[in-house]
Structure formats: structure tokens, C-alpha cells
Amino acid sequence: MSDRLAVLPQYLLPKHALTRLAGNLADARAGRLTTLAIRWFIRRYGVDMAEAANPDPAAYASFNDFFTRPLRDDARTLAEAGFICPVDGAISQCGAIDGDQVLQAKGHGYSTTALLGGDAELAERFRGGRFATLYLSPRDYHRVHMPCAGRLKRMIHVPGTLFSVNPLTARGIPGLFARNERVVCIFEGESGPFVMVLVGATIVGSMATVWHGIVNPPRPGQLREWRYDDETRVLERGEEMGRFRLGSTVVMLFPRDRLAFPPDWHPGRPVRMGEAMGAA
Image (cartoon, rainbow, N blue to C red; front, side, top):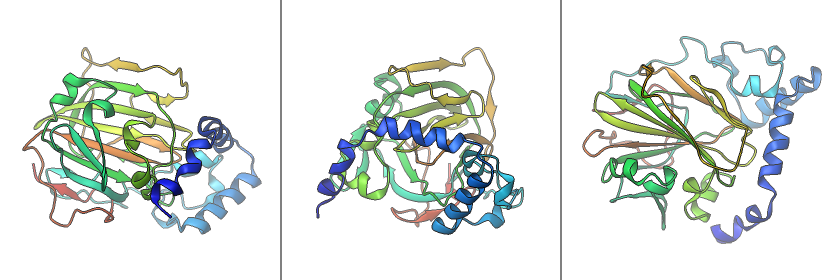
């Protein structure tokens, strides 16, 4: 069966309704039922609770509390590198931006302008630059950290659909990451601007940042933007910047000649937050 045929049912599903339902269930505080659901999830996906700040499944009042659980302070070490990996997950794609085109999967790409909600001027700053797309599976730690220090400049919530973002869907749905709902975070670092895009997906109840809190819901159906020109919000390398409340994908953009990925960074490779992502 072709990838496009395999993902056809996703076009027919009521994705936003399913996501609203999942978000409500994940926020429910149902006592023993919540604990049973968490224990099932841990067994089903092989979640390593030894890394969690609190390894007791019964300690989490809601599924989202469990899903966004913090790690122990000693669970990750930050590499001595110019850029570090911001998440636990796997590399979907990484490499050079071809003009304004980002590779999604073999035969599929999308433009940086589309990814950034139609902001062609911002997209131009990343022409010929570098990108990395990192997929977070259900078993992974779901907080997102800074790859390098940066001053927050803008945040854009881009409405969109909510396809799944697993590898099969990435191969089967053209322009997936520029079609799904997403939160675009723009920073200025020592080496120039960089962007971190938190991409939503089916069942992803919401996304949050440390400076704003929960960004979605609400979902008003139109682009929303926040500017921080009059504020000095600097996040340090390795500091938490956001989290997924039921998992998804992070896409990062960097300007030309600002980042060189390690030779062993290739699609499918597992990654951990804090490992070296490249030299400045």
C-alpha cells in the first residue's frame, strides 16, 4: 500500500473534534482512573519513569501532568557545543534549506514562508540556511529546550489542520508541517536569528510556552501574533522554552553559515535533549 493511500483516512477524520475531546480527557482529574490510564500508557509505550523527577504514576493528578512531567535535575547533561538538541525524539529530516524549500520527506517539501505563516520577509532571513525537524514519539519527554541562548522577539500562532505527524504521515501528506496548526517562536541569538516551530497534530490538546502559558486553545481560526520588542526576554541554552500537551514535532530554522550538523545526524537517528547538535 502506498503512503498516500495509507494516510487517506486522516483526511476524513474530524481531527479538531477528536483533539478537543482528547484535550478534555487529558486534563480530567479522575483519580484512580487517571492512574490506571497512566500505568497503561507507560507499559504500552515503554516510558522510562526512572528519569522523571517523580517516578510514581499515582502522583500525577491528570494525564497532562504526567505527559509534561519534568526530568530529574541530573537526567541530562548539556554538551560542550555551540548548539544542543532541544528535545528527546528522533530526527525526521535535517540539512540545508534549498533556497526557501525545506525537505519533509523524499519527494515532499514546503516553503519557509508557508511554515512561518506567510511572513516572506522573515523567511528570507533563512534562505539557504539550515533546518532540523525532530519528531517526539509518545514515549518521549515532551518539554522543549533552547538549542542556544536567544532573546525572544515574536510569537505567532498559525491556525491549520491537525494531521498526525508520524513518519508515515510525513511521507504521505505534502506540506504537512506547513499545513498543521503551529506556534512559531522567533529568537535573536549571538549568531543571528533562529526560529523554533512547535507543530500540532491529531490528539495534541495544546502547546504552551514558558513566557505565555497555554497558547492553544483558544483556536480562533485566524493568525495571532505577539511582539516582545519592548521586553528583554532572554532564554539561556538548555532552558525550557515550551512543551507539548500530547506530543508532536519541532522544526528549527537557522541562517546560512550559522550551524554545521554533526556527521552522524541523519533521518531516523534517535536524539536526546542536551546532546551536541552542531558547531556555531
